[in-house]
Length: 456
Image: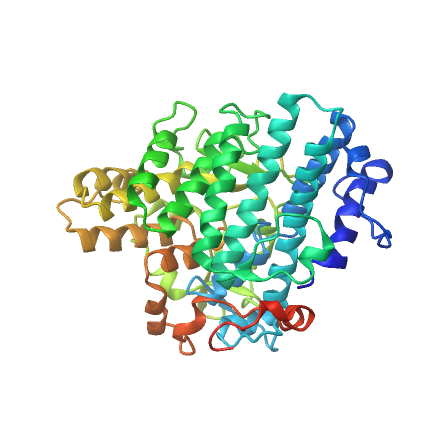
């Protein structure tokens, strides 16, 4: 697996960037002959914070949650987005469900995720070795690094299934590391988050909620419990979040993607006043789309009275045809003052809690959380649903609420065992498309990653 040289270069770049340039603008350097002297890098809080800030900066720039890479890729892969490229691009292959193990997007998501995992491992090792950091400083540094590492593993697990789970920067181990079964990986993630929960605080380290806190880790842990169908454990975690006075649903649909809401659990801050990728990627006007537009199956799932359809979509008419663009984030002119990239928001906890309750046949209680999201969107509440109908309505509400957000649609369909419903709208969808292929380059570099995922 190509975790070795690329990742050593990457983490070394992070630490050098503190001394030479800002954390957002990393430089390429040659691989040193030995490992980084992490005990020197973490001798004081300033350098340790710089290393952690560099990790956040690159997660924002290039990761599964960066606001463009996986959002668009899984949007076209499922049924959220139509793709209008005139040539066969990696994204076009995903839209046609004809990806192979040489697809560049499939490769980029794998490599970038493991870069962040390696960086987090280097931070964890450096903090443990440091003699210049206080106990309290070590706690949040380790807690946040563990959280980021677990989040990257979660996406890798959902996309590729059985995955390698490196927990060290030791090249001699990582160069020939083996995959572990998917459920074992989820168990390791739970252990990591249990540890993170002992390290993170309830309060945010920054008032803008740009660093994860204990509740953020609880939400990710709940998502993992949901994957393993541990409904009671998920319910307990989700109720801690939804009942916390720190959070409340944003009542104004036009402000859901503003950075200041109390519904936000965690968001990433862009550099300066830069427009978010989500605001620019999906934008087109006065022309036929040449990249992405919202699919008819998505648009038609909204009743006309739904405020999300009115405020989170833009209508484009041209030559007698009409398309809809995603318009959750509005600022496109690089004078962005009120939008950060929201990764976790309370709305997700509500719908996950509704699902966990429905799975336990607590239908009346589950319906309360579902209806809270519906009523905020201006659509009528539901009543007297059986378990199957309630679960279907929750999945439909997930579709409406989280379109083009961090691959939600793929993750929700997969968790609820509904991915193969895409057979109805995707002509090339196959049963084995619940996973992507392991990139060919990785298999060539490390034969221990074999066998390739079924179907590829």
